[in-house]
Image 1 (tube, rainbow, N blue to C red):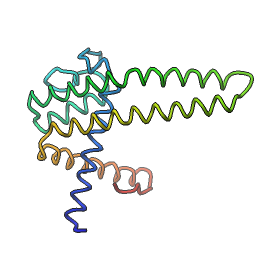
Image 2 (image 1 turned 120 degrees about the vertical axis):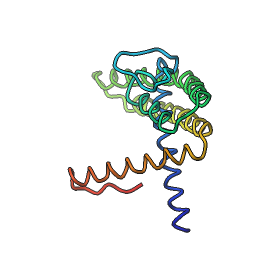
Image 3 (image 1 turned 180 degrees about the horizontal axis):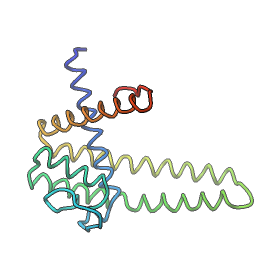
Length: 179
């Protein structure tokens, strides 16, 4: 394996990871995907679903700004986020209900191991389904960007990861594994 191929794979993983985080954030925020504004700041200058909201939405808007995404690309990303949010919402609702059931079961007088294991298995299955939605959204978003845009995001994220690793070394004295 040549160094060039190894480094290219690292950048590809970084880009895909970055897009996964952004897609997951968008999928996890159905109100943002539908264009609602929240208190607390603006994101991208285009005023679509990434404006306002949490840090993940602002991160996505900054990434699209950074790569100078076109309005068409931004609209495609919004459509992907809308679809992912619609698919993920019922799963998140089920996850929330299961957490409440698990909490109630743990607070009851008798610990039912069979029920607890059943809830755990259901939670794992729901997590797997939401993970698949996030991955599909990330890949769909990546398809909307040019190879140059993906490479630019990859380089930015690799630089950020290195900065975080250096920060951990300085402040915590432990070397985190390089990705």
